[in-house]
Image 1 (cartoon, helix red, strand yellow):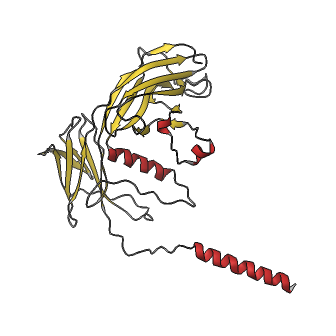
Image 2 (cartoon, helix red, strand yellow):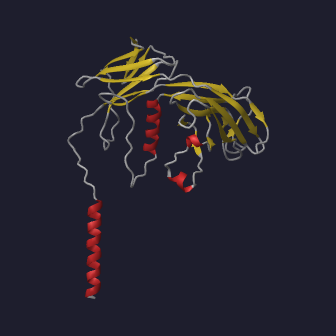
Image 3 (cartoon, one colour):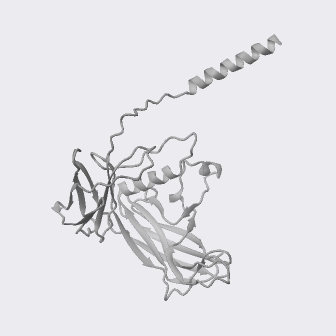
Length: 314
């Protein structure tokens, strides 16, 4: 019995040492809860520039974010100060519809804080073509081939598909009014694959991406053309059905050129949403704001109407 007691004590001691070795002491400064100024603005080409200002909050604080309505906010486009149209409840709107290539800068003064500023450049309009849109009404599949003509230099994109659906879930439903929405799609193109992901390793390098707004960079085709194929289920009984009257209800491909800061902000925000509750490192959300936190990042959207061909897809 003594022998087993000694073994048990040895194992218990070993576990204690192991746990002590794995423990990581993180200093928590509970009294350091001074909020930051949070600046969020994601302007699009040819649209009014808007800004939202709030104070940051402690992560255990369940109250809503406090808005900043008494800030002195200046927006400059290519060095010229723009007219402030409205300011209400932390939302600021300016008489500025930037064009691709324009340089934008915010300067914000909040009482009690130092200068908060951020800048962005509106990316050029993306150059792309829709090579084919095939509707297979037998197998209920839509397949779209898109070719991007990528200019030299690092570029960032987001692609989505817009179309009409009838949201009925059984033949007895009377509400069959078409609804305009982003369409869910899938693709196995390598540009959407995260080679560091567990799925990529488990599937031996073969993965698929799914979503309505996938972002990617031109790292694999910089300065070249690149053709991608996307597939969408056209629905059926028990699911959302697509409207095939494309004359009255057209479908579109929407390609968005993203600034680097917009791409990184969206990417880190998605990684934050995908964090595991246990055994994961916290994700730092990308920011390009000096003197505060948040993001000021532009984008440029181009849409092309799809011209469907009805045929069988192998």
